[in-house]
Length: 71
Image (cartoon, rainbow, N blue to C red):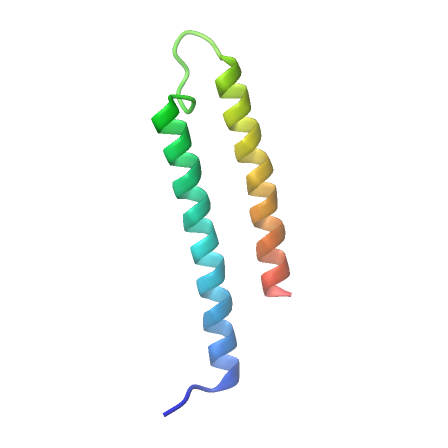
């Protein structure tokens, strides 16, 4: 028993989008919490700037990837 090509293509797109989103979340939360750069203590440190810059740039990359997957 095989799946229709359209349904298979849709499921592949959905799984790629969800998988990449979950990996992005795990990487950013692990780095942010493990290194302590997610939270602010008294003031912003250079680590906070690096982490949030990386998070924004990687989010742009994730959005670009998902747009390419769904085209």
